[in-house]
Amino acid sequence: MPAQPAPTPHHRLSTRDLAARDRLPALRELYGRELMRVDLRPHPGIDMAQVDYHARISALGDGAVHARVTHSPMHLLRTPELMQDGNDDLYLCLQARGTTIRGARFEEFTALPGGYVLLSKARMHEAFTPHGGLSDCIQVQRAHIAALVPGLEEAPMRALPPGTPGAAMALAYASLLGEDASLLPAQRQIAVEHLHALLAAVIAPASQAGLPPGRASVTAPRLALIKQAIHARLHHSDLNLVQIARQHHLTPRQVQRLFAAEGTCFSDYLREAQLARTHALLLDPAQRHRRVLAIALDCGFADISAFNRAFKRRFGVAPTELRGGF
Image (cartoon, rainbow, N blue to C red):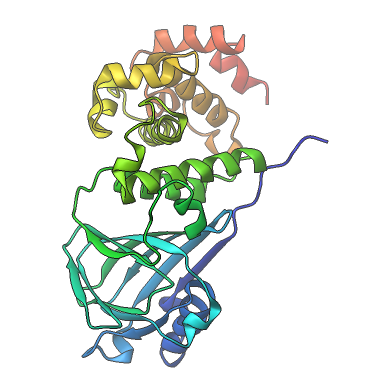
């Protein structure tokens, strides 16, 4: 029996789904203590009725977790009581509007808006987000990163500036893994290993200096994110290599090399994605009322004659004939 895709467990929590009196207790218990092993409180000066919290948490595999949260101003604590669990996971978190972190010995630092914090669950700390906003976080087991970063400190706690190399890509790749339900267990294991390597490069760039620039731990996530961007913009008839390269801070030649490693090229991948999307829509009963031309245009085809020829070459039947078959 062929292997089946590994399910990606998701947890969603929104205070809008709860009665006002239940919001904070549910938030503290479900998201804080059970899922993330922290204590959550409203930021000083924020009334309980003003608490607003919306979280999507995805278990990626091998202990890795991605959490994307929008929230009102909050106060987060990793307390001595919670530290009894012995958890020493590391987490990297984007703070869109900035945050202040305070350690047990009153050491304190501030992450600028758009900056990142690197923290260990093995260290008692508290975080203040006085402006709320977006928090985008990856949590992984320390042992996986320690295997890649010689001399990794026992319990890191530091701020990383906006634009830290590799941080945005690591978070974007974690989000992609959380959304992708098609990966087989072996594929997901490899993908999580790539995520570990991306995080190691963010935490200690020097530890990656001796590795070849084309290593799979970087090229595979980068290509996956490029493909995601292509599928998200299939409806743009002017989508091209230069736009995609610029979006991912690469040169067109670098993007072509990534596709070449898979035995294809950007234009062939784009055309196949457009044709596959058009084929699926033409077979969708919910799209029956739409003209073939409208569907083709929505999938990025600006020339209907060229579309018809490409579709027939790919599927052996004209678009109108395919639709007439059901």
